[in-house]
Structure formats: C-alpha cells, structure tokens
Amino acid sequence: MTPAARLQAAIEVLEALERTAQPADRFLRDYFRARRYAGSKDRAAVGERVFSVFRHRASLAWRMESESPRALVIASLLAEGLDADVIADLFHGEGHAPKPLTQEERTSIAHGSGSEPPVAVRGEYPAFLQDELVRAFGPALLDEMIAMQARAPIDLRANTLKASAGAILAALRADGFDAHPARFAPDGIRIPSGEGLSVLSRHTLFQSGAFEFQDEAAQIASLLGGARPGERVLDLAAGAGGKALALAARMQNEGEIVACDIRGAALRELESRAARAGATIIHTALLNGAPPDGPFDLAFVDAPCSGSGVWRRQPELRWRLATDRLTELTALQDRLLDQAADRVAAGGRLLYATCSVLPLENKDRIDAFLARHRDFRLEPVHLLWRALFPRAPVLPGDGDVFMASPLTTGTDGFFTASLTRGQSRVTVGDGPG
Image (cartoon, rainbow, N blue to C red):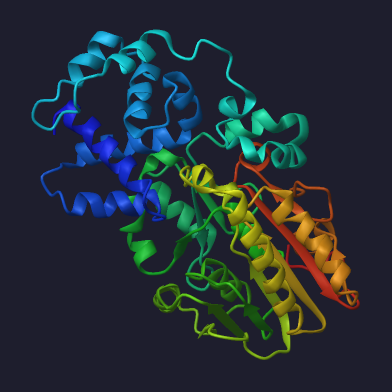
C-alpha cells in the first residue's frame, strides 16, 4: 500500500467504527483478514493511525473544527508536522488515495480553530464527563487524563499452578524481553508496550498456560478477595474468566469457583483458558435467570462498566460513552450487587470491582449498597492488603477502597471494594506475605 492508500484505509476504518460497537483492535483484525494484499507494515501503519486518532480525537477535531474521520486523519498529519502542500500531495484522489482536499479543508488546515482549547479537549475526554472526572481526580484531573493518553504496558500474571513468577521472569529475559516484576502484585510481570503482544501470545510459556495477560490492577483486585483453598466462590460477571483463573491459582486449585455470564461465547473461552491453565475447580454457568444458589464464601462482582479505566488500551471507548449508557450501567451494577449479596454466607465476603474511574460507578454504588444491606460492612482495603502481603507496598486509595490509575499506579484505572457479611475474618499478618 502507498502512504496515501494507508490514509484512505484509516479513514475507512474510522468511518466503519462509527457504526459498530466492536472493539477497534478486533475490527482491524477482521478488516485486514479480508484484505490479504496489505502487508505487516501496512497493517501496523493503519492501526497506529487509527489508535492515535482515538487517543487524540478531541484535539484533532478542535484543530480542524470537524469530527469527521477524514478531518481527524488530516489533523493527525498536521500533528506530525506535515504542511499543507505535503498533505495535498497525499490527498490526490488517484488510485486508492483519499479524494482531493476541499476548499473548506484547506482553510481549516491554514487557520485551525484560532482559540484556546478547553480542558476537556486538552484532556481528551467527553465534555459531559467534566463534573464526574473532577469528582474523581480533583485538581489532578488534567495530569490524570494526559496519563490516560499513553500506550499501556503489557502486564502478565504468572499462573502459579504451573510456574513461579521468578521462573517465568527469568525465561522471558533469556528470550530477550525487557521484563520486570510488577510493583504491587506478587505474581505480576511487566513488559513495555513496544515489546509485542502478538509475539508473547505465541510464546511456549503462554501456550502451556504458565502465564496469562492481565493488567496489574486486575490482579490486585483478584487478590483482595482473599480467596483460600477449599472455599466456594461465585464469579458473577466472569466474562472470559481472567479473574476466575487468578482466583483458582490463589486457591491452589482446591475448592470450587462458579463462573457466570450471560454470554455463552465468553464462557466457552473461559473453559478453554481454564483447561490450558490447569484450573480444574472452575465451573461455568450461563446466566439466563437467577444466579446459582449459595452460600458462597466469596462473591466477586467484576461489574460491566464504562471502561473509563482502560482508555489507554481501548481509546475508542471514551468517545462511545453516553449519559443514557451510564444510567443503564449503574442500574445493572446495583442489581448484580444485590444478587451477589443474597448468596454470600454469614461471615463471607463480597468483592466489587470495576475498570472505571468514575465515582458514579464506584463509591456511589457501594454507598447505595450499604444503605440497602445493613448486614454488610466495608472492609478497609489497607488492612486486607497488609494481612495478605505484609511486606508489599501500600496500595493507593483512601484506605477503605482500592483506586488505581495510570498516573498513580502505572496500571489501568480500577476500583475495588471489599464488603463483609457480619464479623470480619481478617487478622493483620495472617497472609502468606
């Protein structure tokens, strides 16, 4: 593909993504499967431009005074330092190149918006989230949002049913990966984003189930459940099972994990992953009504949410979010919490987690839950963490809940709260360390 053809392909992909809820990375994969003539460098160049546009969509639209995919691609070229003549040469309309620039586009290229962009543009987030994000971050808002614009690293979780984190770390380093221990999670390994996810997914250690791809914040959330060998655990919104797999390893494959979801395809993927990982205590249950009967020692609600915490990995999500969707999500989160509460044993735990940074989906939901369920109480996260890992770094947050973000923890944005039904079982220092 010529440079001009790559630009046209990026425009087409961006136009198509406006009409689908499919994740951008999956859409790009399918797009190029149908276009075998595109080489690896073509795929990389188009994909990089598409993701760059999503990461900087607000400022690019501000520059061109237009949100059309074509205008966004033109603005991305301006951001790279290309001048009007070079851009006009690329938009020549011949072959697979984009159509020639219009007079309106030429005027926007020459002059731009001509005013100072508002903070939502500089922070690259939807303006309707302004108040909610101020609630979340206060005066650090812009710094937090700038951190959200960077590419995320690759985090791995060593599957201790098969290998230790130290052994996997040594093997990856021997293979040339710039791998390091995670900052907080004891079984976590971090590799810079440029190392190549596709290469790691073909690595023999992954194929054998020795490690999984999982952001460190999600690993921490799983650990805060305090799951122990022999317990019965409910994973109420399991998806493809990343946290169920982490719980199985923590439980040393002893006990039972019932992983539920409304999506059969996700549960089938979990079954395949569990077989690879050797996690034999996971049983799947398709939700077409009420969840399985309790009692459970631990109910884990990793709730569907806005995904505002994973904007680094899926930058398109920030532009797909709308107020009515947030209303639907908060109602669903409340419903899942209530369903889980009914199945928690006396003295058991309910763990609530989201990959969101919005208080509306996090602290507000916990406060509302506690008002409805007087038999539950919040278990301070700092005590849980210290009990489990006395020598580990202190988790960020207010002490009662875990709150992560790219700026504060270098992880995805994440929230976790632990609730106990009745008396707490936590004793500081009773964990393995």
